[in-house]
Figure 1 (cartoon, rainbow, N blue to C red):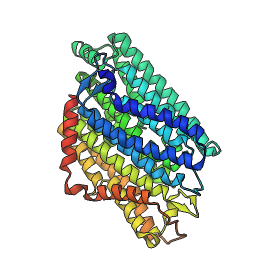
Figure 2 (tube, rainbow, N blue to C red):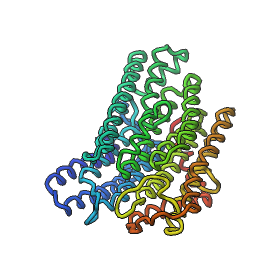
Figure 3 (spheres, one colour):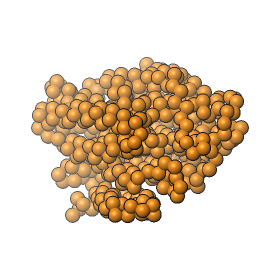
Figure 4 (tube, one colour):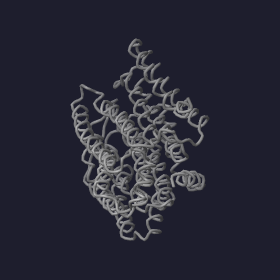
Length: 478
């Protein structure tokens, strides 16, 4: 029973999802669909309450799951990101919506969230894989949710095929680890690796294959090929979800695997992480320069940001983990805010996605342009925006470990990336207005934009609180 008590958040969301699925199947009216949507928001609020009210550090006797400050920090980000994405979807459930989402959308989001929470709290390879597949299967369906849309169907098929391949690679890596160490538990693997510092080639291959599978989930180079197409083809609200919560879960398990079972052989994986980090930063910076679709641009931006995240992981220290946690939290806020602005890009009720569609929008919608500008400057790492602090901490952690080349390349790629972020600001403020965008912004969207833009703008006033929580979370991992 104690085991179930410490999994109360995950169990509550899973059971609620199944009940909502049954309810939605019977309540097919417009009011019934709205009931499912609003209840899903309530489920997430109650889940946050359960997460904190039932939290105590705990290690499952069977080594399946673990509750610690590290998991609590990242689970909180996942639930907050999921809640904000669902709030942004409210417009699709209003009466008279031109592009209504089916009732399955919030249910699939909740089921995917359960998988993410299981991943973050995993203490062995089996529970990790279970959580990963639960998250992934829901995401495959979400991508192709608009079945009559050719681009969405194509994106869903691409994501499913490449996702299945990456899951197979990860599972093969898990089998190698089990075969050569005799255990799937992180703690036992750590003891084996510590006792046999000159680990066999089989263990190293297994570790690298697991890292490859996770790199696909965070769209790190060279496993990023799915991201631009899926970001462009999926509906905007679903792309916003892709760019936030699932990335947090993948980063969480990346950190836990690298530090817990394989922490004593960091010299064996550090060079691999450095290569992936450099490649991701460069591809993210230069790949976005030629993009005209803002969703594809944000896809390459996400690839670049994952490169910056891996700079902190490459350090392999507690300071490095702390910097990754801070960067992840700030990135989620920036990403959700940016996609909220993208969702609002509409003319006569129809979505527009090209950067040129933002031409002169500052003259017609100054608050919208100001909000998007804040988010772009933050993503570029311009001080005193929140994004600057994220990059500052990861580079500081890398320099502390004398990773000077990695830090220099990171700074230079950040300078290159600043071009396409500032280009968006330039288009909004200095180009000629072609046609005004729709201004019927819902209260929910205004709240999301106020929270995300406000956070990025005033975070510099008191950055210490996030630093303290991230330090406590990182300390629990070591």
